[in-house]
View 1 (cartoon, rainbow, N blue to C red):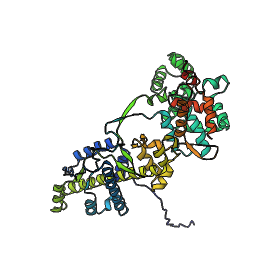
View 2: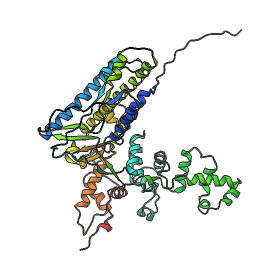
View 3: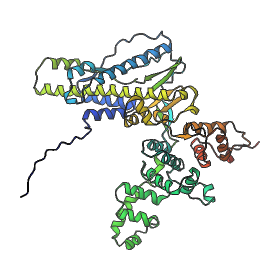
View 4: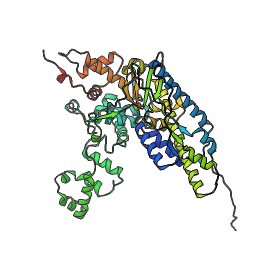
Length: 499
């Protein structure tokens, strides 16, 4: 007889529940300042408990020196950030269990800090929109690379792969390598002194990056990558891309149907899908199209310190409607109207709370970047240090993904110019002395070498490699050529000026 036993087992699991409030906080974190203002205005239209606070007579600071006004603005923001952090440290995790009265007391309004525009400091940027280049393909891929889990050796290889892509996103050998009988994989392997198999393995990882089809060596490989991304690698579309692209180009669909033994309409439908794929994955990324931006953050140098001022100009001054607050206080608990107002009150409080959290996070991330990149702020781009998301995340006690969201589509004005926050997270190259130097700093070195060259005898890429080598920076010639192209510098033969 079989013995039956009843066993009680306990299993503990850790699960992140994405509440609507958490989703809202994450969404706001990714928005630019202009997008945030638009979102707030939309929320005000949909939630009657949210209203814009009437303008109040501000303390007259017009007669104060510009530096003092900036310092006061920075102090107000810092005090608000510290107050928000103190409140968050006492906050409840479950939005359904929060003390609404306490939150209402603490988060009943959001008043942005606006810099007085009169009598600006000497280095205060114009409030007019400034022109910046859109993110190019290389920047987009290097950003994804920094978020990857590749080891140090693989990161070196992946960086070289990305730096050798052409403007269409293809990995192709240059003329010098072709003349030497090398394909692109062999050329990269030789320049890094690694095996061909290692380069091939890392290439597969890079080909998983966005945009789909990037880092392919030809059209066929690019379209196959895109087909796999669409989960159609085992169908007719994949077979046609794999073996019949020349017939597709000649529009000889009947021959494809005969050879694959399928009906012509099926081939026609498959070819229609193929025509919707992107033959030039890098097309969407260009350095040439201007983008008009206004900084989200300002970093000023005042004496020996740097102060951070969030650009909150244009953000509505939010508050919870006093009328509805008094209506709730009057009673009527349990009525439909009371429940509606209570629900809208929670939504309004959580929006204001999420805005506080967003501004605090942007401030802390910028503050950390300033600490890491102080030498850049003082001396310029040649002193930019290699930096990864993990370092900033650990510095301020946040997750890397949070830092990633904050640095996307946020621009900061510094004494050295306006940069996207992403700019400060730089891949590094190792010098002969073992110290790391940021790739952007190396590009600046190349730019300076070309600026100082003899116009009648411009430096070749090989000579630039040699000059950098004397500074302890080891680069392959093809890498110098790639950096030079990214800087918009012509080859030596085209830079030569005849007397």
